[in-house]
Length: 74
Image 1 (cartoon, helix red, strand yellow):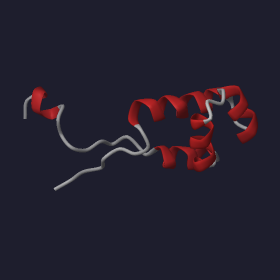
Image 2: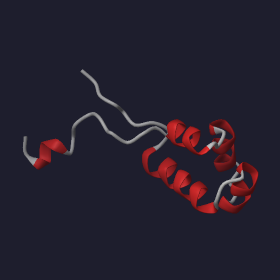
Image 3: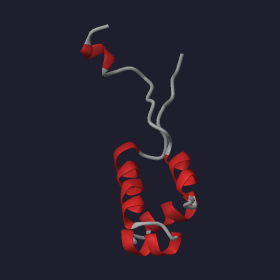
């Protein structure tokens, strides 16, 4: 398969945002509410007792990949 076709395969190995939030101990639903409410990374980091970098990375994942990645289809 050439590179052009490879770019259009219907799956990703990127973990879901839910999995990522679970791994760092951040409540997924409250994290999404924080994004919805336009809360800052600092505010959310304080709420979840994690670093600003963790929240920043989760936020970047949300805006880049959405809630979930397609893991494959037949």
